[in-house]
Amino acid sequence: MKRKHQRTLELIFSRPVSANVRWADIEALCGELGAEISVREGSRVEVYLFGLVRVFHRPHPSPDTDKGAVAAIRKWLEENGVKP
Image (cartoon, rainbow, N blue to C red; front, side, top):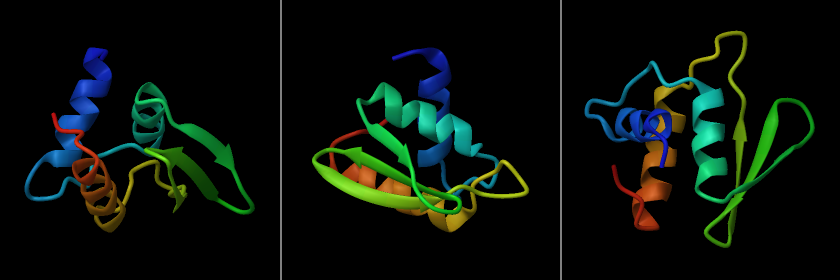
């Protein structure tokens, strides 16, 4: 795994939940893990990973992901054995 993706993973798993995680970095990390990412209507993004589909909203106008989404992504990764 590239250092950039490792840093993103560490940010996702940091406590307290970080508010400085860029959505583009999360998408890149998911792609590195083998996810299929497709854009849906509006600002929705479908991520197919671990045999599961999750739908997230791209943040706007700020590029940073909100804390609730970061916590949900952390839980999803943790449940599937991905850790920093």
